[in-house]
Length: 369
Image (spheres, one colour):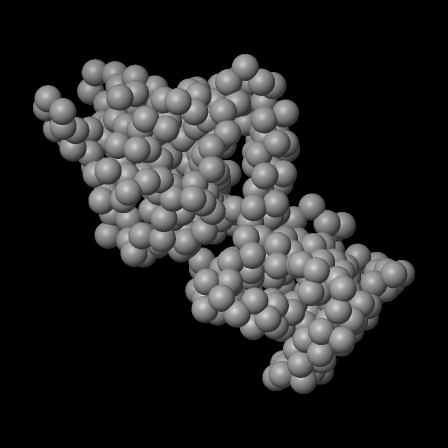
C-alpha cells in the first residue's frame, strides 16, 4: 500500500487541533484524574449513570425512604455518588448544597460536612478517570448523547478506535423507545395515539414492570401538549390509572399545555422543567401544531428537529413525538403509510411506530402497533 505522508500529516494536525486534548484545562474547576469537570457536568453525568435513579431520588427529591428515615445515611449516599467525579471537597460541598437533602445540619456543622466527605473519599473503589495508556479522557472518549450530554458542545474530532466500546443500547421501552433519541409515533386520526402515549407515560412514571409486554425504564415524564389543556388530559389520565388499578396518577407524571403560547416559549419552558426534574421521557403531542412550518418542506422539518428536539437529546431524554399521517387512498396499504409530510420526519427519528385500528365497537377499540 502506498501512503501519502503529506496527507497523513494534515490529518494528524486536524485531529490535534480539533480533539478534546487541544482544549486547555478550564480555570476554576478541579482537575480529576485528567478530567476537568465543572458542577453542571458532574450533575449531568450523575443523571445519566447506572445509578441515576438513586441520584435523582436523593438530589432532586430529597427522598430518604430507602434509608429508613436515616437522613445522615442518605447524605452519605449522595456525597459518595458525586465523589466519583471529583477530588475537590469544596466542589462536593457546593454540589450537596444544591440538593434537596441540604439542611441546617450540613450548612451549620463543618465537622459533619468534613466527616461525610472524608468517608465518601475513603470508601471509593474507583473514580471517573481516563483509561490507562490512553491520551483521551473517558469524558471525551464517550461522545454518547444520552450518557454524557455531549450534544451542543464544541466540535470535537475523536478516533473511533479510542472510543470506549458501548454497552447495549438503552431503551425507555424495550425495543421500542430508545433513550436519548426521538421516536416518531404516527397513525390515522381516532386511533388513540394520545391515549397510548399517556398510558406509556403512566407506566414509565409509575414504575410499571412492563408496558405492552415490554420492559420499561422508570423515571419522571413530561407530557407537552400542543392540542389540549390540563383538564381534558387529567380526565384521561384518571381513567387510564383506574383501568390500571392505580389509586391516582403517578407523582412523577408532569404536564405542560402549550395551547395559546408560541412554540419556542413552550419548548424552552419544557426544557427547563426537564433539566430541573431529571425527566426521562418527553411526550410531544403533536408535531403538526408544534412545527409551525410546512410539514412537507424538508428545511422546516430538519430545522425543527435541530433547533427544538436536539436540546432535549442533549440532556439524555427520550422524546416521543406524536404525529398524523395522510388519509388512506383507495388501493393503498395502511402499513405503507408514513407520517404526513417530509420523509425527514421519519429519517431523523431513531424509532418509528405506527398505530392502526383493527376493530371498533361501542366503548372498545382494538389496535395494532
